[in-house]
Image (cartoon, rainbow, N blue to C red; front, side):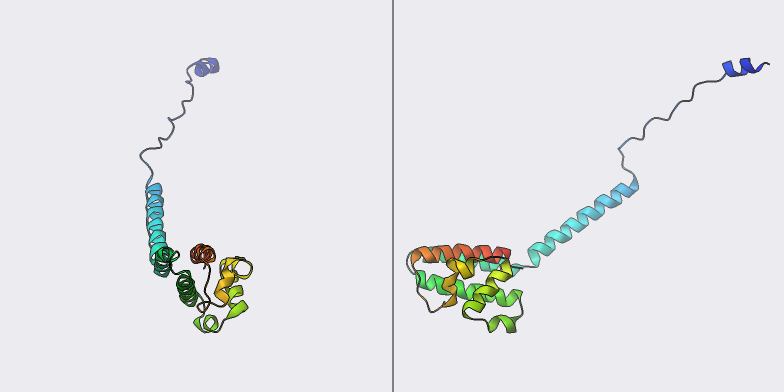
Length: 152
Protein backbone atom coordinates (compact mmCIF):
# COMPACT_ATOMS: atom_id res chain seq x y z
CA UNK A 1 0.00 0.00 0.00
CA UNK A 2 1.26 3.40 -0.87
CA UNK A 3 1.70 6.12 1.68
CA UNK A 4 -0.95 8.30 0.01
CA UNK A 5 -3.52 5.53 0.53
CA UNK A 6 -2.64 5.37 4.21
CA UNK A 7 -3.10 9.12 4.59
CA UNK A 8 -6.53 8.96 2.97
CA UNK A 9 -7.67 6.42 5.57
CA UNK A 10 -6.91 8.75 8.53
CA UNK A 11 -9.83 10.33 10.40
CA UNK A 12 -10.00 13.80 11.95
CA UNK A 13 -9.14 14.20 15.62
CA UNK A 14 -12.23 14.64 17.76
CA UNK A 15 -11.96 16.65 20.97
CA UNK A 16 -13.81 15.34 23.99
CA UNK A 17 -16.98 17.15 25.07
CA UNK A 18 -16.48 20.01 27.59
CA UNK A 19 -16.53 19.09 31.25
CA UNK A 20 -19.97 19.88 32.66
CA UNK A 21 -20.19 22.30 35.57
CA UNK A 22 -22.73 20.11 37.34
CA UNK A 23 -22.34 17.92 39.31
CA UNK A 24 -19.52 19.63 41.11
CA UNK A 25 -16.26 17.92 41.78
CA UNK A 26 -15.69 16.81 45.40
CA UNK A 27 -13.22 19.63 46.01
CA UNK A 28 -15.91 22.22 45.29
CA UNK A 29 -18.29 20.54 47.75
CA UNK A 30 -15.58 20.68 50.42
CA UNK A 31 -14.88 24.35 49.66
CA UNK A 32 -18.61 25.19 49.80
CA UNK A 33 -18.94 23.37 53.11
CA UNK A 34 -16.00 25.30 54.55
CA UNK A 35 -17.51 28.61 53.43
CA UNK A 36 -20.82 27.74 55.10
CA UNK A 37 -19.11 26.63 58.34
CA UNK A 38 -16.84 29.70 58.46
CA UNK A 39 -19.79 31.99 57.70
CA UNK A 40 -21.80 30.44 60.54
CA UNK A 41 -18.85 30.80 62.93
CA UNK A 42 -18.35 34.42 61.92
CA UNK A 43 -22.06 35.17 62.40
CA UNK A 44 -22.00 33.48 65.81
CA UNK A 45 -18.84 35.34 66.84
CA UNK A 46 -20.19 38.73 65.78
CA UNK A 47 -23.51 38.25 67.55
CA UNK A 48 -22.20 36.43 70.58
CA UNK A 49 -18.94 38.31 71.10
CA UNK A 50 -20.51 41.67 71.90
CA UNK A 51 -23.65 41.26 74.02
CA UNK A 52 -22.56 44.41 75.85
CA UNK A 53 -23.05 46.40 72.64
CA UNK A 54 -26.64 45.24 72.20
CA UNK A 55 -27.43 45.86 75.86
CA UNK A 56 -25.91 49.35 75.81
CA UNK A 57 -27.80 50.29 72.64
CA UNK A 58 -31.05 49.03 74.18
CA UNK A 59 -30.46 51.10 77.31
CA UNK A 60 -29.66 54.19 75.26
CA UNK A 61 -32.79 53.68 73.19
CA UNK A 62 -34.87 53.50 76.38
CA UNK A 63 -33.49 56.90 77.40
CA UNK A 64 -35.15 58.56 74.40
CA UNK A 65 -38.46 58.62 76.27
CA UNK A 66 -36.80 60.41 79.18
CA UNK A 67 -35.40 63.25 77.05
CA UNK A 68 -38.56 65.36 77.04
CA UNK A 69 -39.24 65.18 80.77
CA UNK A 70 -35.82 64.81 82.39
CA UNK A 71 -32.93 65.73 80.08
CA UNK A 72 -30.47 66.07 82.97
CA UNK A 73 -31.18 62.55 84.18
CA UNK A 74 -30.87 61.29 80.60
CA UNK A 75 -27.42 62.92 80.27
CA UNK A 76 -26.32 61.37 83.55
CA UNK A 77 -27.57 57.97 82.39
CA UNK A 78 -25.77 58.34 79.05
CA UNK A 79 -22.59 59.12 80.95
CA UNK A 80 -22.95 55.97 83.06
CA UNK A 81 -23.68 53.75 80.05
CA UNK A 82 -20.75 55.11 78.03
CA UNK A 83 -18.43 54.65 81.02
CA UNK A 84 -19.61 51.03 81.46
CA UNK A 85 -18.99 50.27 77.79
CA UNK A 86 -15.54 51.87 77.95
CA UNK A 87 -14.68 49.80 81.02
CA UNK A 88 -15.77 46.68 79.14
CA UNK A 89 -13.86 47.43 75.94
CA UNK A 90 -10.60 48.87 77.28
CA UNK A 91 -8.36 48.48 80.31
CA UNK A 92 -10.61 49.17 83.32
CA UNK A 93 -7.80 50.63 85.43
CA UNK A 94 -6.92 53.19 82.79
CA UNK A 95 -10.52 54.07 81.91
CA UNK A 96 -11.66 54.43 85.52
CA UNK A 97 -9.07 57.14 86.18
CA UNK A 98 -10.06 59.33 83.21
CA UNK A 99 -12.01 62.54 83.83
CA UNK A 100 -12.67 65.85 82.09
CA UNK A 101 -10.89 66.48 78.81
CA UNK A 102 -8.80 63.31 79.10
CA UNK A 103 -12.04 61.30 79.25
CA UNK A 104 -13.41 63.07 76.16
CA UNK A 105 -10.14 62.53 74.25
CA UNK A 106 -10.27 58.84 75.17
CA UNK A 107 -13.84 58.58 73.83
CA UNK A 108 -12.86 60.28 70.58
CA UNK A 109 -9.82 58.05 70.14
CA UNK A 110 -11.69 54.85 70.98
CA UNK A 111 -14.16 55.30 68.12
CA UNK A 112 -12.14 57.53 65.77
CA UNK A 113 -14.34 60.59 66.31
CA UNK A 114 -14.03 64.23 67.30
CA UNK A 115 -17.54 64.96 68.53
CA UNK A 116 -16.74 64.44 72.21
CA UNK A 117 -13.99 67.03 72.41
CA UNK A 118 -15.52 69.42 69.89
CA UNK A 119 -19.26 68.72 69.79
CA UNK A 120 -22.25 67.57 71.78
CA UNK A 121 -20.11 65.10 73.71
CA UNK A 122 -18.59 67.93 75.78
CA UNK A 123 -21.55 67.47 78.12
CA UNK A 124 -19.93 64.25 79.36
CA UNK A 125 -16.94 66.15 80.75
CA UNK A 126 -18.97 67.17 83.78
CA UNK A 127 -21.71 64.52 83.65
CA UNK A 128 -23.35 63.01 85.64
CA UNK A 129 -23.38 66.25 87.66
CA UNK A 130 -24.36 68.55 84.80
CA UNK A 131 -27.88 69.33 83.69
CA UNK A 132 -28.36 69.63 79.95
CA UNK A 133 -30.87 71.22 77.68
CA UNK A 134 -33.21 68.92 75.77
CA UNK A 135 -31.55 69.62 72.41
CA UNK A 136 -28.09 68.91 73.83
CA UNK A 137 -29.34 65.74 75.50
CA UNK A 138 -30.84 64.47 72.25
CA UNK A 139 -27.62 65.16 70.34
CA UNK A 140 -25.61 63.51 73.10
CA UNK A 141 -27.82 60.46 73.03
CA UNK A 142 -27.39 60.07 69.27
CA UNK A 143 -23.64 60.56 69.64
CA UNK A 144 -23.47 57.93 72.38
CA UNK A 145 -25.37 55.44 70.22
CA UNK A 146 -22.97 56.03 67.34
CA UNK A 147 -19.99 55.71 69.70
CA UNK A 148 -21.23 52.37 71.07
CA UNK A 149 -21.67 51.05 67.51
CA UNK A 150 -18.18 52.17 66.43
CA UNK A 151 -16.05 51.50 69.51
CA UNK A 152 -13.74 48.53 69.27
